[in-house]
Length: 350
Image (cartoon, rainbow, N blue to C red; front, top):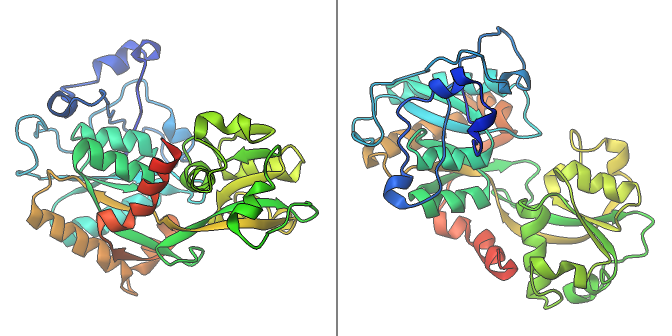
């Protein structure tokens, strides 16, 4: 198993870890992007949890195929496929689940498949450094990966809690007893927020920040993310959907921005969810999906897509459901699927 680590400071690493960084040649030397590193860490503790697996071993060992140099051979001679699986709040025990999926895909594709678990920022960097070939992304990282590496999002997830199938809604939530009401027009509804306290999921969240800001800019209520304090009485940023909803529940914010699939456990309890209502919903947020590096040969890309689509079949579908609560994967056009996020980023000036 590999873990992705986003390294901005190697000064905090022990000497043994620094010595274990071998021949990392970044695509950035070719494409001019920021340097990113991917460390292969072997998990020495049997049965360790996802949380404990993020702690580096004192003596990390190389994992997987090391005969291939990304800077010299490219991926025409791909002998091991490495897939980055995003760590998510609503998916537990990813180490076991991703290994199951990787083993299945290996049999279907005909080469070893390695599962890599990490955050999406590190996954983008890993693609850019030719350390992974495929990545599970939400929409904003998928756009960033396309910009830096040429990777294209080819499949999107469908979930029962996505109202649009392979799209979902961004929600502005208030307490049931809030005086804020849904008005006849979007602008009338959002005009009520002037001077109010708002809690965003985080500064990087798509449905919990970017999409709502794009909506506010589109309604000409704010100029951009740097001018929010001129409209709202107070702006706070959390560490996820749960923190934004907790701020509303505790009266620390009048409204919170989240995804529609987050208004339930494990983000908040069912009892807490019943205390909240939707003030405004913004549809069309692109569902999470799967991107393939453009360096992967076309014939191999087709094999990968076909193998992943076999997870839709009844005999294999539980593996997909266990992974990220998806019911199936569907083919999408990269530009069309990510268009809503791209437009929101432009409007929000991000």
